[in-house]
View 1 (cartoon, one colour):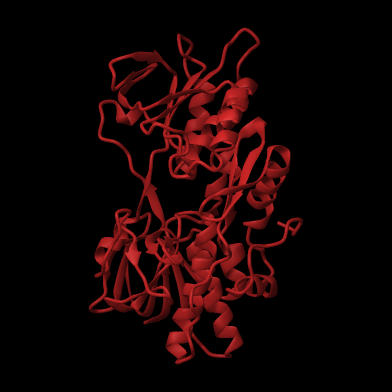
View 2 (tube, helix red, strand yellow):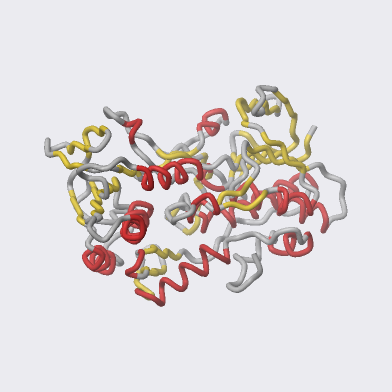
Length: 399
């Protein structure tokens, strides 16, 4: 019987486990905390659009080990909320079953891959493995028409960052006689449809400056090696097609009773508890939590970190009969990397521009390369930052 069982090794899962460990230490109680995840690393997923994605990870044992959280490398297959039991299978096919007193589901999300001819030729930056495969493909793509043409499907947050970063990556890989080309495809009639009109002029200006071709009101119909066909019947020679259009919560949410939103996230209360399964808390991309009145959290690192901290705190508080904390994240902000054109930083749900260009880029780099990284090897610092009242780490903190 595990006192607290955490499913997921991303930001939400790691901070759930750390916050639970902090509560255990603060209250001087003996509680077992176990985290189950298939990989050995915390993947810095917000950075997978960059070059060298194999470097975007930190060992989970350097975070969880110092604070006494047991880690199991396995993939959860079943959750039984009636008997409070979870079954997982490791890389060798061995099955392990746990019972739990409190469960935190932080299994993340996955890219929604399309059902279209040639979908197996699509690349993504959804996982570190996919991002590494994309990097290798870019370097080894065979010569021919479209060798240095990359089509990015989806002009949302991820698509914009992939497309603008890809301009520089292709320039570094190609020769002086080559003509790299990035084509951004969006089925809506504007770039950044979910970002709204606030940052759109700055984004459009950046795309123009970088030479990214934009095709609005368009989608792809099929892909084959070296070629992509659009829904209007036109074709384009392209060596690489990157799919970024939308994510879905882990399918494990379907095994928890309760209401789910269109992204399959579980509805949770102000304490991140699933009402229909009161021993279960959800965090990160599996949770449809209210960030502000009328606004649910986004499937992003910005919300995954505090969701994890609150969930871990509340799971242990619930076990100990202590007051639970109401989820209250920092005010929403959004910073989109725009490659060599800088970035655009906005604040609030209406996304009013705070800064653009190099000033916004500095903020983006500080966040992605320093502030979201957890402390390593230092139990006291890990537990300090695990407090839900502490935000992300200050810029300049040692990684």
